[in-house]
Length: 433
Ligand code: PEP
Ligand code: CO
Image 1 (cartoon, rainbow, N blue to C red):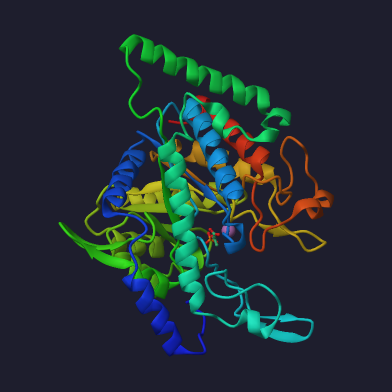
Image 2 (cartoon, rainbow, N blue to C red):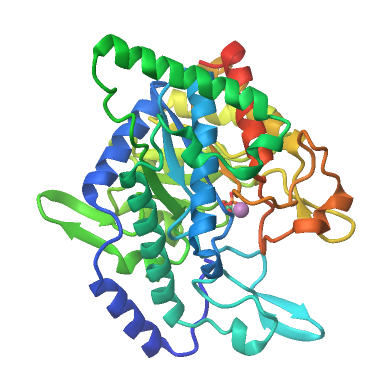
């Protein structure tokens, strides 16, 4: 499902052969380490923060945007460390999030029937037949952009960008004016003071406090792209998708008997599946059985996205069924994709209150059902966009036109993302576990 029709299959094969011969983007050591973190998160010993753009654009592969994305994720994660009192594992939706599922294969623009835009990995958004024709060379351009992104992230991290002793490195200019600035800076001070206290007691610097690791993830939608980067490695059994640490399958391609689940079944990475309305409990059980027959801890994340109005009724039976069958699952809440709607003037948007409500309900529902919420999955950007309504600045529908950039789903802007982390941290202190 959701695969484009390439007009020239031989050109596609040439691109895939080239892709298959290029070096991997990540290593099996890192993948195995993330799986171990996921096992810890499933057991309630750490928390996963997964976030980034709905779709990365090739044109946005520049230093400012990448650094801003990291800054928001670091800031949110520190707030969550404070709130949950657990280590936080950071997983970006980046370095490969270039392909999008679409509800229709074609769309009508100015009376012309055109193939849908499926993300920069496949075609281009301009409404012309040339731009919309799937182009296999974009698979290579995507791999290169992913490599450039990852190279910059690794260099920043290694160079001390994420050093907890230097929060000023990842302060964003407009943090100062944000309605949440005071609360954020109070939390940050408490973290740096605790760190100094620890270091004074130990007489040495706390191991690892000078670097924060990032893992990568993307939707494993374009199967030829994923398959060309699926390899064996020396000294470890099995196959690894070496284009990312954590591939997930979206809800539109999550059919238990479909090709995408079959692909995930064959690899050793930790894998995710989006679940929500439209997938029955029975189908979710079949997915879990297929993807993790040995019940390996950390192997399977179910990323639930029911929407604020439905989570209370629809999530508990799924949790109950997994428990009854003894299925090991890392539960991650995606409060974005069940809450998308269109405004009268045509913008796709989400309300901050719905997002916050779904996440708060998830924090309460899991302990009530005897399960553990191990992470959250957010669409956000470090830019000052106006795509989601609400938040402390009270963005309303009339504001959306001001800085709406997304070609696909609406993202939380920097302030809204930080505000969400602060609300989660507060709620976790009273209701989470
Ligand atoms: C997404 O994560 O951007 C997405 C398309 O999600 P879902 O599969 O949950 O609709
Ligand atoms: Co999205």
